[in-house]
Image (cartoon, rainbow over all chains, first blue to last red; front, top):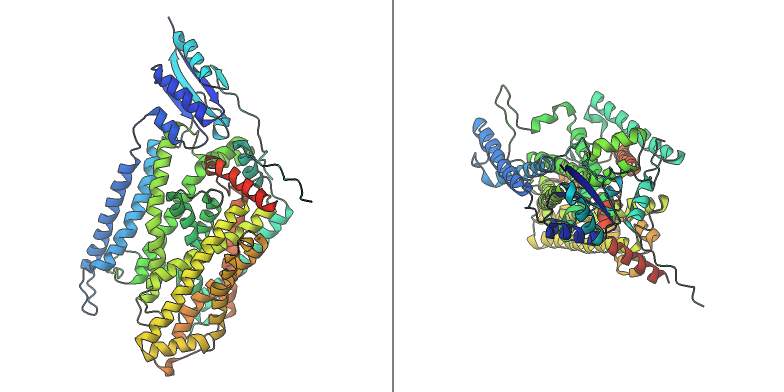
Length: 182
Length: 452
């Protein structure tokens, strides 16, 4: 009876990493995640996952902001009628400014909150296969597969140009700059 | 005989990390002397503010008819300084401008601290600072609410929104870079960076949502930056006062804000590059582009001055014409001409490509622009009030020591906060530099070609 294993491939560059992802998908190995030091459209395209729901949250945040702006301006003007210079109590042009600012404010807050929710951060534990170099200068692909398929996956990743393919936990890399307390 | 061409630098991802993180190593004694100097000035300014609160607004030079002067000048100046940060980080991000990658974090940091500094001045000017919350709509027993037709209330909403969005935008951009710093740090720094990094590991899931959120934040910040300084300009333009009541104020103020802000970015980056050895990341190519923005906005500002004066002459209103006559030739006339010299004449030197990449000269020009833009705000704000509708109301304003020391304290506050940030958090975005590493290599090649 075979168990599952985690295979971690380290790539020196974005192109090789994209090659590795495409080769995995061609081999129908879909249970993987990628580590990268930079955002990459090519990697995202190669992975082929659906687009982020952050857009919808921002839209909802923006609409809520406008509605809050309308509620505040109209509500408070009706509560405290300030008749000045024959201006209408509900004066649309200045109220639009408040609605606009609140639309941006609520939309921005929604963007950050939805990012935190969708990306599942704060994350208190490292994902399997994480290495400190993936925040620095290396790309990584961590594949979960049956032990029987491990050799095939390792071979695919090796052919795609991985610098290193391993099954063990990541080893911390040597520090390039020593950031110690003063 | 020509010297041998220097070797072309081709930085890698590790080189970028090394260069940026090197700045964050334990600072030396001189750095702490500088920080102590800044915060001593802040303490002196705070002391004068405390005295003002205790004694009353009589300790300032504010007298009828000049009730808005140095404090409001500082407020508009600092809000203006903030604007270029958002221009560089958000607007140029949307346009995928290549040269922004090395300078945007510093500009964004400057934005945050400039808005924080600006936000102090309405509170200081308020006199009874503890009633600041009266500008906000909140349930109260007398059903009193702010007047939403007042530009001052728009300002409270606009500046608060700007501060919040700038802080969030800066924080989001920092997350991947702080994660890099976390991997190199020890002790309390590691714990500090680990908290700020939110457990960032650079997974495809994290990047996918991050990229979308960052893009949308940039999209939201772009109209915001235009709106905030327009709203600030309406504090004046909505009034009936000659010298303030002008329809060109919104675009005129926005252009001036970008002009002064980019100049401040240059003022901060040139010494930072030299002192912290960032020559391989902040190349003359970056400064050349910043200088072009300064030149362009200088021309827009010059055009605005000319249009403003033309409109006053063409409209034929004698009261407004007298206000402008006094602006040019009155007691504060020398400030107007200094403003023209600093904002319209000196930046014309930037037409020369040689001057644009001569960082010492560029730095001096940027300081002139900062002085000129502060002067512009003072001339508009205090100057217009001192020569009001009726000559019997005219009065000459003179700032008091309280206003001068609080202003000095605000500059020290800004510089101190910026210096602290730059030494403990990544002041250059490692992520974006790595994304645009090809452009950085090209920039370095171009520099060497020029140097040769």
